[in-house]
Structures are given as structure tokens and as C-alpha cells.
Length: 136
Image (tube, rainbow, N blue to C red; front, side, top):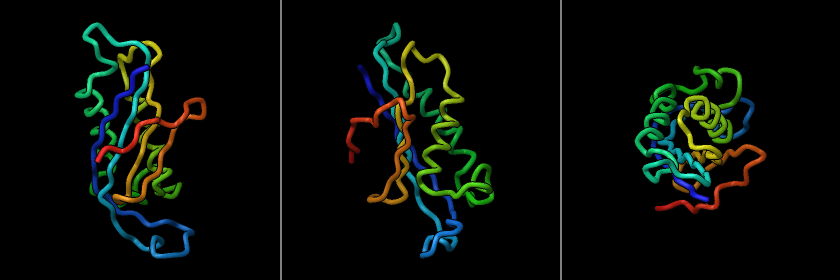
């Protein structure tokens, strides 16, 4: 099996509805997002997936949320913009935008960091979490 990851960052504000604590107030983060793909087959060039294409996809998702107040953006106008829900949103959007993936390759996880020490990871039920530790 092969595994690749790309990390990108964005800035956004949010407030957690129904939360009792500081995070119920509007505040912002410099988020980091890691997308991890896994698969057994490489393409004819020897790649699982082109890093440049993967970055384009992530930039497309980031464009919808960068420097915005997430509570005003779908789907976070309905669901809380928690790190967990942001990770699921990135998974859903990136999966929808993926193309030309070698057979059997798929996004296995998305990790979103709100800070250097706090993160949330989403992976589909059928996929175990990525076994890759965060590179500093």
C-alpha cells in the first residue's frame, strides 16, 4: 500500500452554537488541513496521485471558507463549525472533486488543526485512520 498526504492552511472565524465556554464567542483560527490518500496501485508515472492536482483540489475547498466567518457559510449555517465538522466537510468536498484516481485509491482521512496542539480527524467508517504521524 502507498499513502500520500498534502497539507495546506487557511484562516477563518467561527463560533460554536450551544457550547458553553469561550468558543461560543466569535473567534478565529489559522487552520491547517491534511488530506491523506491511500492505494495499492501507482499510475504509469509511478504516482499514487499527483501532488499538484491534490493541492488544486484542496485549494478549491479552501477558497469557499478562507477568510470567512464559517457560521455564515453552508453547511455551517446549519451545523456547528467544529473542527470535527470542518474535517468531514473537507472530506466530502475533496472526494466530490477528485478525478483520475488509480483503481482502489481513495481519501482515507482528513485532519484539521485549529492550533498546533488541537486537531480533529475524519475518515469513512470502512477506512481505518491514517497511520502517518504528523510531520513537523
